Amino acid sequence: MAFLLFPFIIMIGVLVFIVSSKRMKAIHAAWDRAAAELRLSAGGGGFSAPTLNGQMGGLRVAVNVYSTGGKNKTYWTRYRATFPTKNTALHLKRQTGLSRVTKFFGARDVEIGDVTFDDAFMIQADSDARAMQYLTLPRRTLLLKLFSLYRGVELTPDRLEITIRGYEDKTADLVTTTRRMVSAARLLAGMVDEPPVERSLRQRAQGDMSAAAAELREFEPTPDDLDVSLLEAEVLAGSGEFEAAQPILVELAEKLPADEEVAGLQRAIERMTPDEPAPDKRSVDMQEILDDLFVSNRLSFETTEIFDEHYLGRNVTWRGQVKSMRDFRSDLDFGDGPGTKLVVAIAEVEHDLYGVSEVDAIVALPADSASHLSRGDRVTFTGRLLKADSMMRNIYIAAGRLM
Image (cartoon, rainbow, N blue to C red; front, side):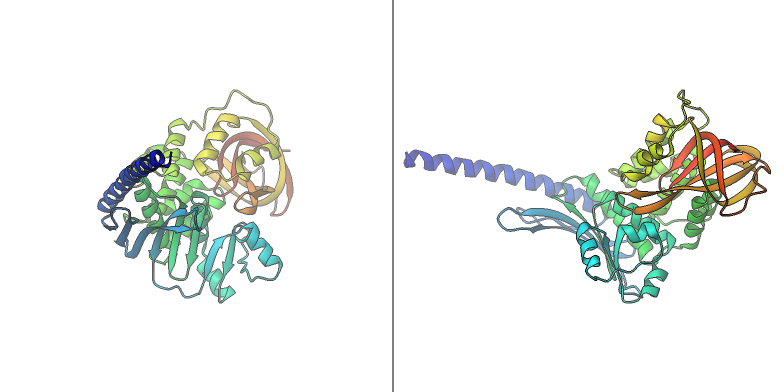
């Protein structure tokens, strides 16, 4: 019996070797194609793990595979961009259950005063003041988005890393993740002109998508600054300028062939009809829509798809606290005026990733109907749901009236 079993074992071993050899050959071919497209050097061969190395966007880039564990190994693909050391020794990782426990027992965690950001990340730095200075609004916004796309992200004083479980075996994924990492690292390394981006984000936070788009028109990103281009496309789409957003997305789709955010935003634009109310006019409970749109870890295009399918055109009667207001004659969000754009804080939600964050309603009112209001006043308003901005936690309300 043993004599018969031995050849069988040998045959199984040979088959395993052949299958493994073919798989590694296919993986190396995918990495070679990615190296050619990214203009990086490919390394490794045979049964050794593949690597990518070189320069992109003024940064040193390396992609490699490593393993953890003993007998039952787990393999990981690590993307790394190295840049000059920042002015502060800052180390940032995703907030986890373990990190919350260590904080409870006294582990140091810098808090910069942005509740959403502080709840999402474990921040260690040699100086609280320098950490707050470094973590500007564009950098905080970028990191929140990056952590929603990739589970394993780490920022240190001299590098940004993205780690993905398993062997990356598709060229499109290798190209997309490498370019997203380089784009993010350039902003985090101070290689991008931030003021226009910051002004745009502040306008967007106030619910003025048209002004946010105008700020980014003054900015000319390099071919490596894909996050700024994606932000511009998102803002243009959000302000109704679909034709201006489309060529940006077409170019992004070529550079980021496996990016779900780019593909999703393209789908969302194709089906966006913000002036066409949904047949369902039933009133929407505030907590229902907050839980559906802002609690789970969805990207902006996913929020748009859910909003358009379930909430567009439905009526609301909500209450909140006035944050700001401004009159307009014509507005890309709400159309021709005159009117008043009222920003009302309506609730706080606890997000899967971001922690606690505030949700604002951006309400279009008849001109001069809010002149008697001041910041901090409590108001009740009615209106029709128009759109939602998941990144800024804003819900737009057309045809608003104060009660």
